[in-house]
Image (cartoon, rainbow, N blue to C red; front, top):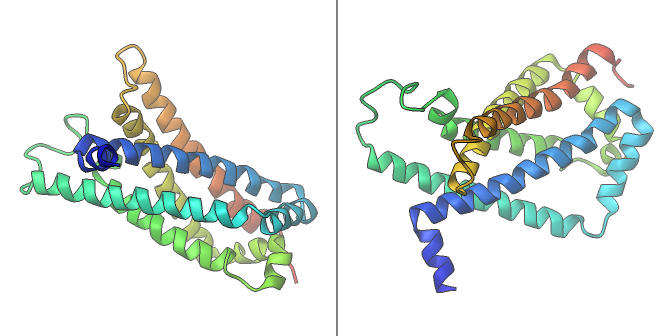
Length: 217
């Protein structure tokens, strides 16, 4: 146990643990998006999928594990960010785009905060709802996304999420020592494409619902 505490206490150890939790959360994003895509197949398949998840005996353990991953990732991210700010109290003397820094890397704390707010509101709206709404989740989703302000917010939030995970994935590879001159560029583009795919994938659902479905009575 002492070696674990020593590892987490070290700067590189915190970054590696944050990288591992981030990779696990990226896996969840892909799995969750895959299930959400069933909405394009109609209410029967999508509601059947939602009912399968709600009635699965491993749902609660999975949700506890997922919540633990989020808390670990958020806690480590907050600590690493605070340590980085403490080490650079006067900021950078050069522009943020120089020295390998970018919009995504310079705003990771902000994109993470926006993503956290989005997650809480998303859970309130789609997870913690009445049982009758859960029985027809397809109707709830379509009805919700016929509100233009909510669609705009959702698309904005998932674009921020894509920016966050795109840079986060690249950082995770670096923290875990997976970068190499031979394929660093490939990992960079893989990370960027992953972020873009996440943003487009999640944004496609509210856009489709708003423009290509009718309000369900």
